[in-house]
Amino acid sequence: MNAELDEWLGAGSAAVADWAGHVRRLAQRGNLGAARGLLLDLPALAQPHACRSGTCAPGLREPRRRSCCADLDVEVTPGESARITEALAEVAAWMQPRDARWSGEAPERFDGSMLRRPGRRCIFAASDAAGLTCSLHAVEDATGRPRGALKPMPCRLFPLVVVDLGDGHVLLTALARHTSPLAGGGGAAAFPCLRRGDDPTLAESAADTLEELWSRPVARAVVRAVARWRANAAG
Image (cartoon, rainbow, N blue to C red; front, side, top):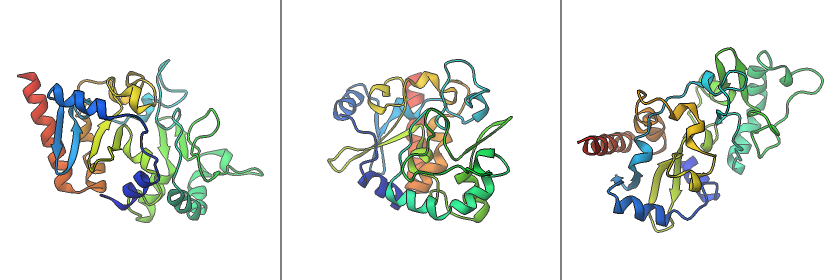
């Protein structure tokens, strides 16, 4: 696995819940897959998914819709906090022309542990007519840093959920109707990115993330496993 994912799992930052029963139910219903050492929650990974921040950004979204950048609390590990703090001058330079709170006499501050402003969107999210843009992601790209050099693991994963089952197995699942009580974050139906049936599967849309965190063969194996499951379910 990716070193940052190992750090995140080791820090106990992953979803905390009793997933053993969930895995048993998946297996009993023929909905548990496997790909190169990962256990797969196939229905969760087969959901349609595409990120369009204009559909979930505050001020642009429909009533009762939610955003991972505006409505979820994201805590960072000590390592993530240190990397963000070291790059704050670069991030501030990117944010200042886009958000007045990052300039003037009282510039925005990162508290070192939480990305979300109290009751508001992520401190590092810039808003415009098109939606929300992640400044950490933007600075990574602008400076040639690899993904995850600044962007925290929960932001890279959403709506994926990685669970260390504690028995040598890792479950790859996601926020979905059948996982919401365990995964937190509220009901999956409130997130516009998970609502359009003509979008690609989550496994397909998250393939780059899977490749970054594991490898290209793992990403391809996950996509194939989900496609097979969908074909069997449709048949």
